[in-house]
Image (cartoon, rainbow, N blue to C red; front, top):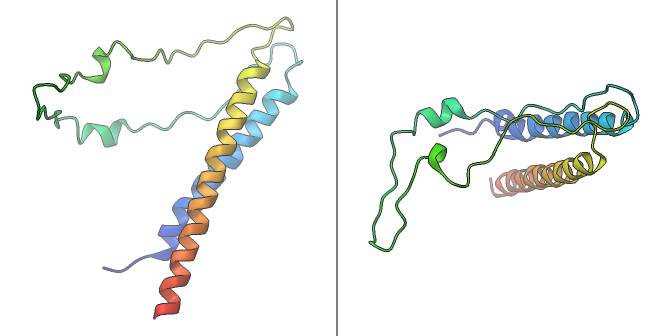
Length: 132
């Protein structure tokens, strides 16, 4: 089995570009917080429906009578409401400083996680090179 280093590291590079682009959008939202009729923008969340459709036939195994019976995600009482709601601010725009700051903090943590994985991957490659 051969390892294609470009595709291996390319995943990290793409993730860093996505996080960087999201940082730009969130900063733009905050910069336009006082712009009349401005609507906050964000990247679309990833859509894993194609990947999930390949495993949809897998059921939950109840290996002990004490286990809770599994339900499909649509039937859960804990399902989240993913509708795109926003609050209109006094200037007529849809930018919430609190929401944007929470998104920015989350994005920063994701960026740092990807950076850490990228650095770790480079370290593994260095170890492999040193041992060969």
